[in-house]
Image 1: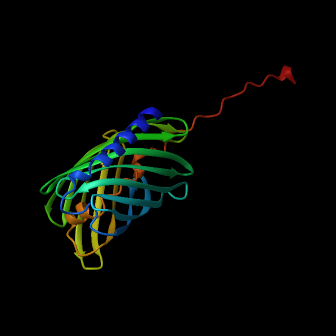
Image 2 (image 1 turned 90 degrees about the vertical axis):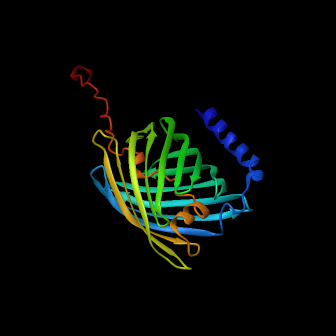
Image 3 (image 1 turned 180 degrees about the vertical axis):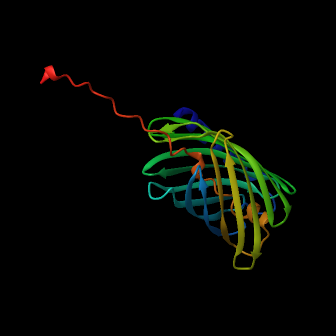
Length: 264
């Protein structure tokens, strides 16, 4: 699997290196920009709260870089969440995005690592978005992928739906297999200094796992509509949310050693 991961990253970087000639009239990132968000919800029966921050930078005309971070908890201090990643990408806001990223996520002191390629295609008010990569934990590794379709009924409203998959395990943690999700985001205000949006997302695997999250997000980077922020500024946070991990996987009981009085 290490060879598969390294090959995937090499291909992604090679494609990135070959794409400057495809650069459009608009830059990959319009300027230095960022966002912060706070969310609360129910994750598989446990309440939780998460905070998120991102910073995006232009790298010349055709490329950009984004760093993401996340902190929070699920079900109290037992399941503390911390994550961070960075991704490098080529983008033409009139066509789409192609990039690669890597990150680490920690749940209750146990960590796993993620390496992936990402892509987006833009068709007027429709966006097709996908991720494909490799998860690595202490005990196991496995592929993961995500695909979604997003539609903007108006410039400040986005609705989306898709599927995700992860398959790995590490002590109490495990990838949940397949899950469907749907989300909505509405930008309620935009000024030259910031933009304010409300968002929500629900997830289900059809077999008993369900989650619902909602919160508020603040954008920094000029007065823009939501669709322009998504295609000209930050390309979206790809840190795994908590539903990428099953924190309730049972821990095996320790082996029972028979007691023989005659050995005393």
